[in-house]
Length: 235
Image 1 (cartoon, one colour):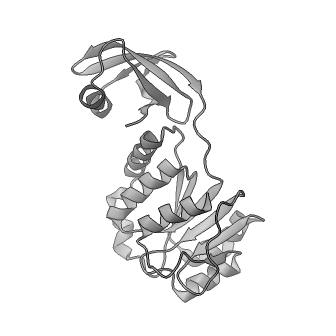
Image 2: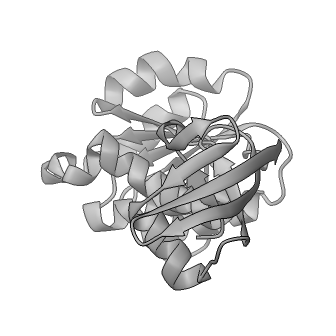
């Protein structure tokens, strides 16, 4: 936990918060704080700064805070992601939040098993929990927006062209396609498929919507590896 994230409900007034539970345990066991120590803090979807421990008990801590720093900038990116395997999905959410992805759209695909959509990790509170873990790692406060689109064809035909607009749109897919570009400096919509990649029909529909197929080489990557590799290469 590189940043102690503060909920609105933690605030007793504009300069004081009370903390308990997981965050208090982390303060005591990992940071081993004492009264008078300072920690990096940030208000969720707000500013960052410093928090001074002014009261410390086994079940509760009180901090005096000063928030005067902007969170780091997000990537100019919309990530279109075929729904991954549930266990992998948790890690991918954390990676995306850590890397600064502002918008994630979860999409169905032929190779996405129906059972994936039944996972409890898709519940709003579970999504939020994993995004917060990623933000804590990166020292960021702004939660990414996550959308769920279970119908591939209507989304790609009716919504995706408007989403891309005049921006760059790339679909990552193994095959005889141009190499993924490096170090771009423009807004981007990036589509990453499921394990095994998109099927040809899906690639065709994504191209019709305005996306360009690109590849990372001959090796077939796990989705979580592909997400990290593509974002590092692109930005």
